[in-house]
Image (cartoon, rainbow, N blue to C red; front, side, top):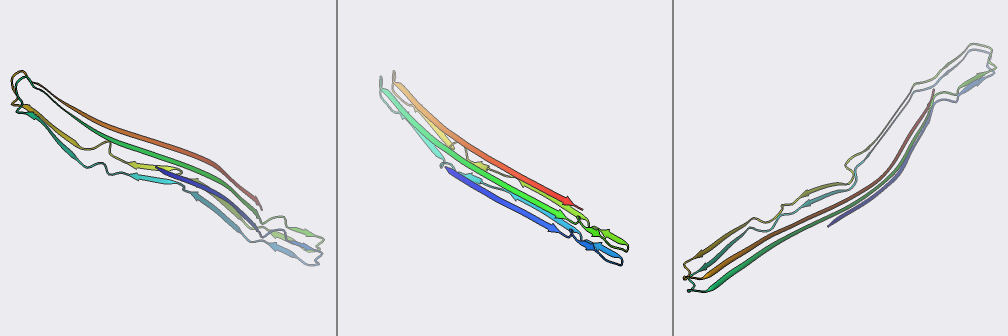
Length: 193
């Protein structure tokens, strides 16, 4: 039995600005040149990996023999082999993320200047990526039962004898995998040039 529970909460806020500059009341020429902004948001989530690796039961060699019994005898052998394998995996993943980028090279102003005014705003590059992969991953490597060899022999018994060999080979293999994932990813990029 394996159980994994993961909860991830995060907030990423980027506020970058080269804008909101102003020149006012200059008698000569006025220049505003704003810089460039590069914002790159990359978020990767990988939660809850369960690996089950079971080496099964040892090999079993069984020899059953009814022999050398007298006339009119009742002879019986019963053999029962039971292999039980139960695998239970429970995984819960909760991811809540909020990423915001407010990028500004603009909102520049020039008022009341008597000369020439030049405003050159910078470039904005905003990239965002959220990857949710391998959430609640289960890898199960388990054999379905034992390696069993049964040799049954009935020989050399007297006349009129009743001979019976019963072999029960039972393999119970049960796998229960429960995965639950709650994902809430928000990515906002606001750019003003």
